Length: 520
Image (cartoon, rainbow, N blue to C red; front, side, top):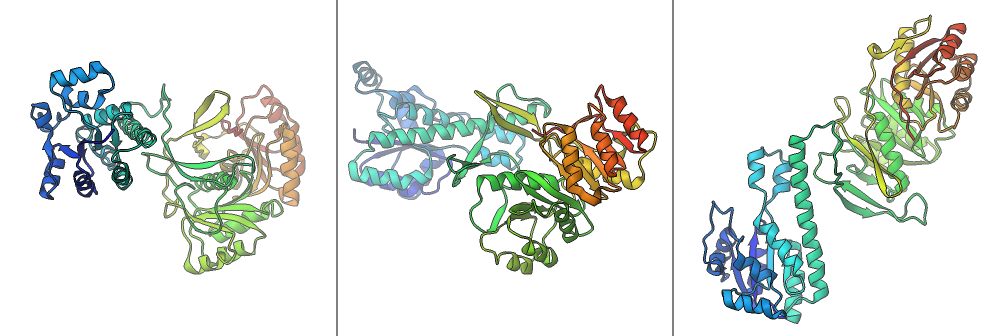
């Protein structure tokens, strides 16, 4: 079916004069509206006004232009049906075979922080209706929803005098994606204005755009892709980071880097985190990033083989030298790199080097975010991210001996780290560096024994953090026997009294937080 008439009404006028001119050269009549009509006429492209078809002027300062039965009847008719053909003839409606529309830039205006009145004026009504009508009737109407489609559609028209049905269907699918994303952007903007940030939505819409296909998922037989969130200000993130060097990131690299970045976001002072399998091998905070890295690596240098590293300060020459000397580092993420440091680190061509999207984390305050996990068949689990912070005022001392100032600082450091360790989680720390980590054991006492074993002689005079309470005194006894002098834990178990008794018997200071940090 040859295209004879096209309705053209666009907000983004990139390429429209050339495209409409090409349509006109192919003998297709152009019908247009307002600003689009003026742009075409100025450039010598002949077109009719929409009001010529409707017999009605644009009204309400352009709010109503194409919302008319003569327009939508012309688009939605099925000419193969005698009743439709008869209606068109009786009403004097001229068919429209092509709709070229892009929408008011609501997403751009909303992202710029527009006030409500301004944003509402950028909600396109007629354009969305035109796209949906043309897409519904793609068997009879060609719908063009983006300037990127102009060259392709023009080439098809030049070759066939029409657009084949498979191409019409593809164009319709893309147009429905445009209206879907547009409505989601409007909903997101208005919901942000009206809904409480503490509410979990009754209907959860996930707005993500595919960035790239990955080589594979967790294992080579699993397909995978990376998506980025739409319409949200990006917090410091792996997805938003710039890769400066190295081979393509894998699915597992993204998981590890994300987990590492989440740890160093906990600290305002220079900090480093070394991870394997989304679990920290070592974490430290120190006066300089190079010292932080040295101390983090010392926690478990054997497990650090094939690790990822995150730091919350720019990488200087000394830190670059330390990382370069470390056996097999998969990836590094940092706010920035000194030129000489980057030159050194990129000498190992396969090592991935990423620059995150923030200058540093000195003044970074995480905003409330939610975590989505597809762990249940047929559904999703959604929760708030665990961003709770802890100060000394939040602690309740339950032992006879109170912790020293040095122990308190170390306990708070260990507590910030333990929430990033798989439950059952135990972190043993000295000052502001980890010396032993027990992760993912089915028994809390096993995690304690593992952390003590990892710490070795450095366990003497250390403190211990547990992500959950102690149901029995056995883990406390094991830690105290090894040389732990202070313990931080949530409390709330029926066995609290036994744990406190064990601490008192061994002169161990114990504090409770009233909150746990499970990470499954």
